[in-house]
Length: 486
Image 1 (cartoon, rainbow, N blue to C red):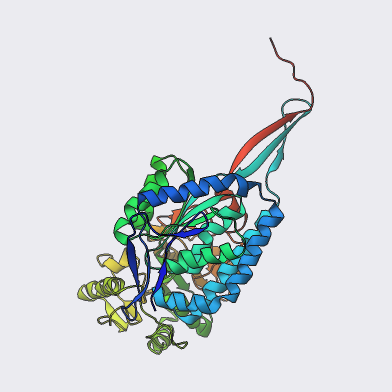
Image 2: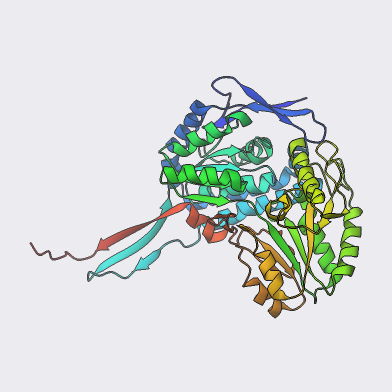
């Protein structure tokens, strides 16, 4: 039976004003998995109305009560892991191991947000006037517009609203059209069942054809004070432009062209395992995925043989099969886009070491290429699929130069058994995140997460996430009457 979901506004499930709906298609079977309400601008305004009305009351809720709701939500999410696995497979082709990791990390994002509620916030300032007390106080901003992607729907859907809500804001969430349940409505159900008051978290789903109008309406509403977007660099530029036009700060977590660097002193077994995971987890559909594996020429032959052999053995196919590692991409268009990148590279002289060929529906084979040159689309373009490029280097300087040869700057992995050498290289890599003796994919809810250059700006996680969704006010208290010149 096909699932149907309406919008969530002011705590109620309501249809779109026009009554329109849109299909949510299973990428593996091609069948309709669910239908959801297709909101228009008027529905966005209704959602902002609800969030704005709920803001004063939610901001005044005691920190301990707010914290309890978030902690209860984390426990509820853990208890609904089986439902999450089903949703992620049905909407986005996510494998069971990827869905379970989403549950684990999303629940811990809620717990970290809960911890932030009662963490110290603000400063006591030196004052010019004798007897005066100066305070720098961090306070919630109001309504936050949040955009969640499909590729890690529970993690990134939760991250879209957890810190804003913990800080006392209210949220209007626009989940991805490719995973409106997993990245939006399912999570909102969890928060609602945990006791979150009506209107604090509102969810607006839409037809893909209406995405631009819905997003622009949400950002333009004067009651929205901060914009929170995770997604592609292309769309992020548009979102950031809209926010700037309305003089609103934005947190943008965008794409990556990430490198995994294997130095000549790396443990080969660990390096192969790490690189395969960093490239092919969730079929390469992670903003932190390693598009490029840079290997020192001294160990390149042995590494390449072991790396390619392991990739060729990865099980692929049905995401509901627990053994599957390479599941379908989010839709057939994505698979065809990845295949076009591979075809372009091959036509210009690249060599395919494993994989390649045409996709089967949304399934694209795990693929490794070598001999990539700057005239190939894959050289600078983000693959966002089960594809990587293998390159060799002779010196640490060359590895750093190649890793930095991109407009993006999200993350990097450096595999070495020499921590001092690894840290020295890491300090020269121009990314927001670097992992020494590990691959490029890593996310912890207490750590500052975000990129540089075309990978966006702002940080999620820990106190940095709270700072992104609060504003600093200067308040003074005079304990004696001041003297004035007239």
